[in-house]
Length: 409
Image 1: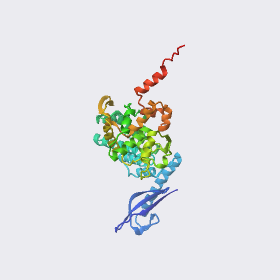
Image 2: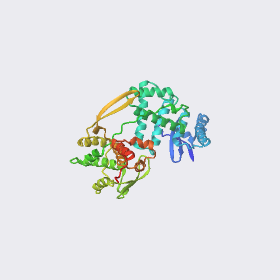
Image 3: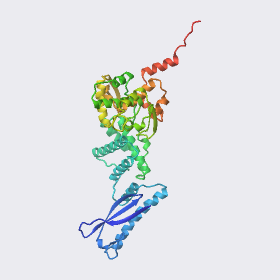
Image 4: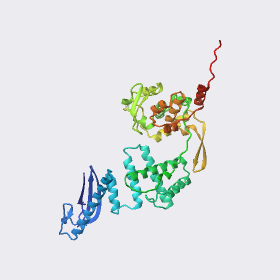
């Protein structure tokens, strides 16, 4: 059920007051200035009294606004769609000239971000916002106007060239294109645009990246580190817990004592909202016991930001003397970019999850069991975390091709 009403904005002593439209649906409201002004003494029950000069024309305009909204509602019924208030507001404002082609695109993008917040992680929202800012930078530097109509194959090529010129790697470029496609598909579904551009031609650049993980020995060196400051000690323990369980930083951050059941932890993941039940090994339990008297309800001493945690991890891994030089090969467009970095500088919270997957497979746990513990539903996604080590290859080769034992008679 919806209502459309008109009211006068407080005139602060002026002879005439602005006429405002208020639309209410399912407890949500938007307001719109009609740009009309009348003397309050001629206003009664959502319309202008007949004594007012031009009353017939004013009331006709107000009725026209109501009919505009009712047409949008009838359109939703005809298409068997449930238009939310943001869609109705946008269509109404567009029809009445408040939006132009340029701000229509970015206004729709803002709606896309706002409506994604309840169902997407903070990291995903940050990704959406980063791509929006990159589009604004592209628009500004190239002195073009981005509209829904301007999103063509030519636009895609120019945007990718722009990102390559900025020396972004192909995987970063691919993330921006993927986000743009997500927004454009959202806009089509929500009737923000009816563009016919074939988005399948918007290729998402993607390359396999070198998986950074800890060896068993490196993990134990970190686990057994001593003489760290209290802050670094807590970060070290939470990181190691991730290495022993495969949990994301965001999931470790939300664990409470209620999630702990001695031999396992049970919780709903922050990113995918899946329910997981993860068995605990001796090392993971030892970390939990270490903080059992934590005054907060949290299972582990988390609380600092992901970025600050990553900064601390680099210090911790430097203490553990993870100083191997790692060479990585990436591409920006077709240009090869080779970088050499000391290993401790590459360690982040996400390294823990990659370490768990790689070491679990190295220790002989079947891939489908590891996937069940990490919550991966498809092997395609899961394999991004796998680093097939020399140890695994050697073990598997011997297992498959070991010469039969000859028993002397």
